[in-house]
Amino acid sequence: MLEIRNAVKVFEKGTPVEHTALNHLNLSLQDGEFVTVIGSNGAGKTTLFNAVCGTFLLNAGRIFLDGQDITYMPEHKRASMIGRVFQDPMKGTAPNMTIEENLSLAHSRSTARALSIAPGKKELGLFRDRLAEFNMGLENRMKTKVGLLSGGQRQAVTLLMCTIVPPKLLLLDEHTAALDPATAEKVMEITRSTVENYHLTTMMITHNITQALTTGTRTIMMDEGDILFDMSGTERERTSVDDLMRMYSVSRHKELDNDRMLLEK
Amino acid sequence: MKLLIDSLQLGFLYGVLALGIYISFRILAVPDLTTEGSFAFGLSVSAAVTSLGHPLLALPAAMLAGAAAGAVTGFLQTRWKIHPILSGIITMSGLYSVNLSVLGGSPNLTLVRANTVFKMVPFLSKNDAKTVLPVVFALAALAAVIWFFHTHIGMCIRAVGDNEDMVRASSIHTGFCKVIAFCVSNGLIALSGALVAQYQGYADISSSTGILVVGLASVIIGEALFGRRSVTLGFISSVAGSLIYRYIIALATRYSPLPAHMLRLVSAVIVALALALPALREHVETARLRKGGGQDA
Ligand SMILES: Nc1ncnc2c1ncn2[C@@H]1O[C@H](COP(=O)(O)OP(=O)(O)O)[C@@H](O)[C@H]1O
Ligand SMILES: [Mg+2]
Image (spheres, rainbow over the protein chains, first blue to last red):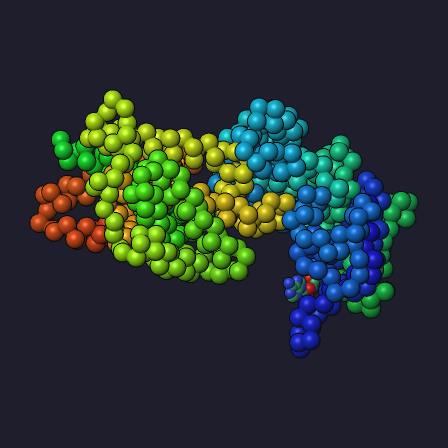
């Protein structure tokens, strides 16, 4: 589904602060795979997502999505195939527009005629049903401005906006990190069920190693712009958080330097 | 009574302007300085076409002219990445020459002998038409913008003004949305100018000076009364604000010792005070808390 070949991204090239954020990285995702991504701060996880979304172009390498070469496709064209949820709940929604208007923006981007009234009656029914699946009561607040919602509610709306037209690829960048633990768990729960119900090919960055090993079907660890470990199946099932930490320090001769990660093992 | 009716007529004519200003100022959240140019552009095109004997054709022609001006500003801003305020100033400056050319090289043109839309309404005298037509045009424009900003494209424009980063990361083209918004906004502003020219029976380019502040005052007065709850309400309150603004101005000229040429200064002060209101409120609140805190301690 997604294939990244030999991706290189160098920031501030030719300056004293030159930094290689993606270092000849290769990655191939099968249809329907749910990959969790871990790695210390600055490992290049977000950069990888940005490269796939077209926030910038690669210095070298190629990216294919569903067989199509998207290496040089502009960001807004890729956006119709890729759903993305950020850590910051403010980022994914328009605060002064209502829940149903936000959802309609996301839903009708693929189908709507420019001058049809949005959202239409059929759309409203769909939005209500999908929101009801979250069990957060949002289906009764569709005319509420999104800016009045809590962070968790906003992330739920964002998640629905990204998946209401099933994308070819769903990218989640620490999308529960800014939420309190109970809310984070709730948003994780609806993430799991959405990915499962709609068979979405997904990559999720998380700083919670336990969560990384128990969610999805495959886990990769990134370091210094490349993939350090890539595990799935029984190998992954047998790996504990401690194993992972040990593997990291053996291979890199240093401790995993993510405070948040250590705290949450 | 005369004062009331005059204010009503002007209030609705400039209400169309207020709708255009609301689009740039509140929906896109950038004050658009193209306004002075596009208002004068509408005024000039309307006067020129009217004097050629086509007062009806003059209105869509003026709207197109205004939309074109808006497109230029939008282009400068989104394609050439020129600062929003500067883009508007550049278009406005350029339009000054264009407007003079449209009026045949002079800054004004009289329409006394020309036929205008206000003389064309069946069963209505010119004086009655001057009351009825502004109401009709303003309400039609109001209905049109309310509809437009609830369509898919209108919603995309609102989202661009609300959270541009989000829209940029979605498959909606932000630049295109902005250009469309500037076209609609300046088209309305030009229509307002076009109607004013025919209503007054002359076009004078200098009458567009400070027109942005007039529009802003209307929008802000409207919001002071109705709050900022939705776009629909925002549009309605802008027209209402325009009516109230005209009434205040009429009273000010009638009963205050200020001469007529001080009007724009009065408008500027009204706008500055209205925009300062949140800061003033905060100041009062802080002062109140300080005092209260002192008592508790
Ligand atoms: N736009 C940018 N310009 C310069 N450096 C950047 C930029 N984006 C990321 N980097 C650098 O690239 C490295 C990887 O960052 P990132 O992908 O955000 O890490 P993380 O794995 O924590 O998400 C960091 O050292 C960061 O400072
Ligand atoms: Mg990151």
